[in-house]
Image (cartoon, rainbow, N blue to C red; front, top):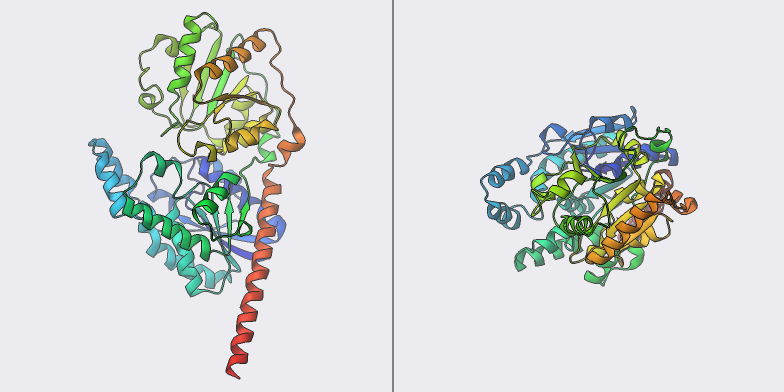
Length: 444
């Protein structure tokens, strides 16, 4: 079996949406003749929610090594508590470049060198964010004759956080240049959706489209094998479920206003609709501007972070799954990982998103989506009333396009990743042989 060193910041028992891609890749790579060695930070040092149920998805044979890091988020928490976000911004844009996890690099590189030697690594695979991990590409290509592939789960310099909180121009130029170096030095670049690829190509036109491979997020069929009974509560209500975090531009104020208006117009009955949000969400953010609204208090319920093992049950017992992506620059490039598990559930999906974006493109072929423009209150209201009336009349049914949905199964996606590994390894080995041969001829 060939060996890949997989450098990833978020891995069990760390929880959250960014973890699942790495867990599923490492779970299925051995089926395609690749044995992965995971290098990830010591979870005790990371200020991230933990989901110990995810450890059940990691093979007992999986090799996992940890590196030491200094997580600046503990420091940031102090400044946020003191209501000094400007200090956090200054540190991020002047000290921690490209991000706060740059502090891990010395410790990480020491472990990389150890593991390459110990396991006779054939290929290195680096996943981000955080994007400071990507800087290892430049170091690795100077130090080792190994292929290096990078995986972008999100956009980097054109990502949501950068666009919503623009950095100083000097930082912007520095980061774009750094991004270009990483992209050009990597032997292959994998991205989680087509929009990320297009953003990279528009910003770095000297790179070729063939340098990039799109491997989306997906769902694991094993997570959906259990059959769950119908829910025992709220049987007389239309139950709408949102799973995940609301943060940044994902503040659903436009949806809350629509709900209030529809109730006041008597187009929906607040006693017949129940909305449940599962995730590490802050009430003050979720209901910003609507904190004491009696209508929302009756209809909307916040729940804590849901262990991933329980997600299929909650989805199966919902009437409708809610997808919300806030409006703003480059919102068309956001797809979110939950979209694929939503589709596999076979439930109707109420998607309040950019109708021209990548998420809408993915959903349109599923046979499940009720899409509403995230900037158009009338569309949001119309789609919700449509769902509500169909439910009242017993006609809330969908026709899932299972052939299409199954194309996002994690095993299939991992097979594609293994094929990229094989092709890249062959290309790099051939190039190294050619370079070595040319060098020998030049010396003779």
